[in-house]
Amino acid sequence: MRFDIFTLLPDTFAPYLQASILQKASERGLVEFRVHNIRDYTHDRHHTTDDTPYGGGGGMVMKPEPVFEAVESVVENTHKFSMDSAPGCPVILMTPQGRVFNQKMALELSAHPRIALLCGRYEGVDERIREHLVTDEISIGDFVLTGGELPALIVIDAITRLLPGVLGDPDGAMDDSHASGLLEYPHYTRPPEFRGWGIPEILMSGDHGKIDKWRREQSLLRTLRKRPDLLDSAPLTRADQKFLDEHRPAAHMKEE
Image 1 (cartoon, rainbow, N blue to C red):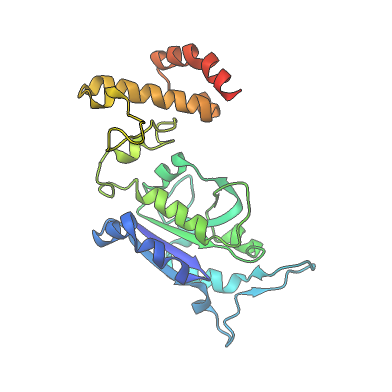
Image 2: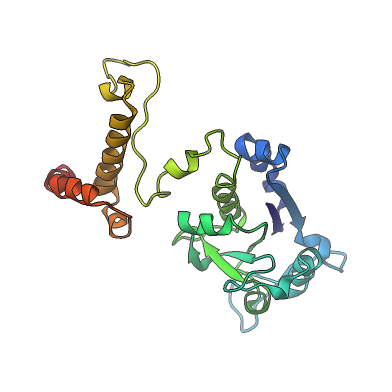
């Protein structure tokens, strides 16, 4: 997969993209990161990328000309993509007004061979960019940051770890919180006892059937206690539902 990132602050990306799992995935040819400086597509000596908003008001707005030129010169099929029929490359604007990003969206986007991410700054982008250039808008939550660079990195990280071969454990991403609609079960490692605190004996039993059952039940309990809203859409079996019904009163008392 290839990511094309359009930003006014290209230097902010290298420290994260060149570390840990993302760096290894890039070195192995599983993913490619290309960071494009929008200022390189200006034509005045000051490399102007923003201007005051029509109608007055505070702040500055990103100008359409350099953004259009940057994206269109890199993403050849800008106008051929739509979320319903997707032969081209999606151009995604990182904005608080977008769809709130989640694991399901990450999985959907991981199927694309190429994705373009546009990072806004200042008061945002000229509305014509939103209307005529981008194909989708993504938010990472109901809050405002100073730019789209951190949200873009979050989206890149979430998508990249879902690509085949990126994680050492081929099933690792499927066990993560939210991957199955539930929060992940608790993890333990050596030493078996720390400051008098042990680990569940079942994890050392060697009985993988019982371990899998324990982990599933722990995921259900953790979701019930911390994020019960997720249970409304999680794929639950009859056994899961029976287990939850038996533990709901206890979970409620613990919250109180």
